[in-house]
Length: 223
View 1 (cartoon, one colour):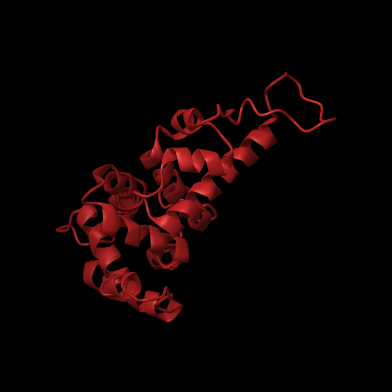
View 2: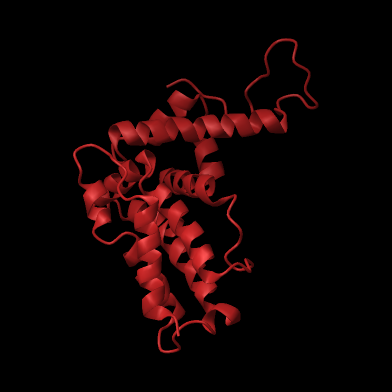
């Protein structure tokens, strides 16, 4: 195999000025990084996780395998970064759960709608199916997915329910972390099985369904 250049070593196009030889501008480096992630995402969706090697990703993205290790630590780290990037697309405009002063119902309804849109998005459904199918033989895949998705979700909600002002509105006999799990079960429940095991991806649930789930949750946990 011929030696491949890393994204930092790729030469600029003719006539393009650069500040330092061999170093792309920040915008170019970011664009190449996004292209690498997009390429990896497409390959994972098409072939699954185990059948996609770092060499294949590097060849398709026109970078060195070393670049992937430097940026992500390996294939599992790259998969984790894809999940985290997808989360950011749905939550980056949401007011922080640790700082928002809106009524608790409004906060949870906003969160519930975004969460539902995230987990029913085609990419996340496919990635979730890949993890279920391959986690037994690829434990690093399961760990990467859990770290980037469920763990972050539970910890974020747990911190919200542990806020002093929020805790004062809730039953004192239920742990904040347990409340987080209970909320997620109310939001998804049997619907998770429905869209994960459909022969073709389809979004399930409507805004009214999410609103009803939030109300059922609050009816059970408010003082």
